[in-house]
Amino acid sequence: MNLSNISSIALRNLIKLTERKEALVSEIQKIEAQLASLLTGKPVRPTGKRRGRPAKNATKATKASRKTGVRTAKRAPRGAVKKKILAALKAAGDAGMKVTDLSKKIGVKNANVHVWFSSTGSKMAEIKKVGKGHYKLQEKKA
Image (cartoon, rainbow, N blue to C red; front, side, top):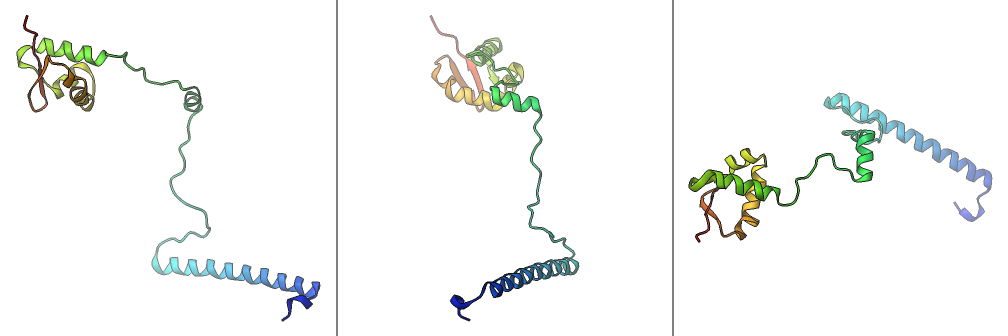
């Protein structure tokens, strides 16, 4: 077939036949999917749409707070954890305190207290590590 000598009527007929063929192929694929689902017992998606967990529906208040940058929980002022830890260690005396007990007493997560001791607490000479996860406040000698 020479494409340069094809008439517009023949081209229209070719397009119609091609579209009809594509529709039939699509129909055959749907039927094959249904047969496969009956044989395997697993449902096969009839459409090409993705399935999965739908997106979260955010409330208007949540969306508004994200846009304005408003935080829902208030943060403690700078140095508040340090003051709480030092006060609790001072009250514990020479025995000191374990991190788990300390975190329960001051209302801070265990992990945050461990991080505080490894960063800020390691720079303070008056805080001594007694054992694994156990710290005490050593009074400065005058």
